[in-house]
Length: 267
Image (cartoon, rainbow, N blue to C red; front, top):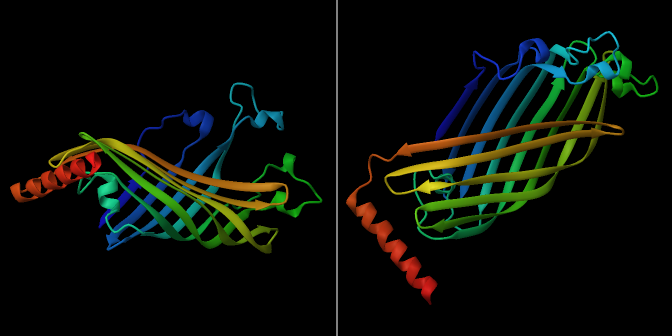
């Protein structure tokens, strides 16, 4: 089992004068069991900026063309489970943290996912200049959705000398209950929404140490007629470590597996 926790860094990558200040909290927990992998994550974000707002608001100066919205909050809570058809495929080894593959492994999988996500404010999300009096959703101050579904996919791990590369990709649909709130009135709808599952990992992975580049993407969307909200979280990171409890017996077993895999390829 592993735990993840992230908070706002003291310094900002972008200018606070142009983009405002963002506060965020990320929590997560994941674990594997037999041919399954489970993950739960929570994201809470506060503070956004609308880029190029001077296109519709002539009171904004040309030196700072963004409209800062410290009142806007976005949230996401997800619980997911992956079921792999190949029992030799393990997410821990795919990530390279607790083990290393000695041969190529591939498998089909199903991802079962449940999500709540949305965006809210104490005032309309869209600037008043962009409101359409015939479309109530343009004055919404809350847009949210709850969805549940199954995403089929395919995973592949390639082993080449000391390097290990892996990719997981899936595409499916979820059943989505979505709503928006305006002027204390809520309207809800039921429909289908696309969902993509994508992870790409690669690097050096040896029995005693590993250095891996990890990329993970989480894409969600809520669509109404002529109005859509997309929420994307992505992680790009370099993960490295030293395995302290690698015994000679384990090394011998992995060496035997590698030799058997090479023998099988020659056939």
